[in-house]
Image (cartoon, rainbow, N blue to C red; front, top):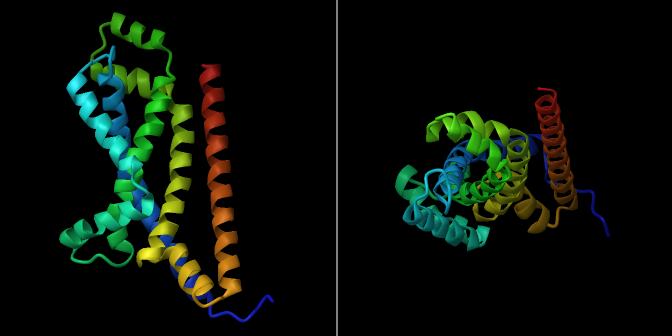
Length: 225
């Protein structure tokens, strides 16, 4: 039987929502920087890449594969001691940011790598023929050509990170996940559980819609030019 009695208050809901946005925003910012950097290194150092380096590629590729093979909850828990060492606590929203960065960086790196590999090799060859340096090829040719795909990549990463913050809520990170667990599940608060589910659905739909429209706009602009 559905029980409409709830301990959920507007203040509690908006605090949890803020915590989720805080974790996603900070983690995505640093994760996107690291993930994109790793992806670029993978693409240019791969066999037959513009700066081929087998050792560098093999080491980075292996590390990314290892981290990505660890389930998100186990990865988050295993990195918490490092959070404690750096910021002095392994509990709370701030403590969860470092584990989330560890989670999302390899994830983004693979997504970005796929986007960059979709760029026509003819464009890279033309850049090299014009005497462009490796940095110039990356900044003026590789990344701009993949811009539309990269928008969808970061959109997907953002949605995945929202899911990870919900998982982080199970280890005391706060946010929507913590609200769903401690109120919706443990206290059998159906209103709290349904509210968190609907909130997550709405957030994901908004992010995906914005990402799709922005990617389409960039693609259309690229065709016109």
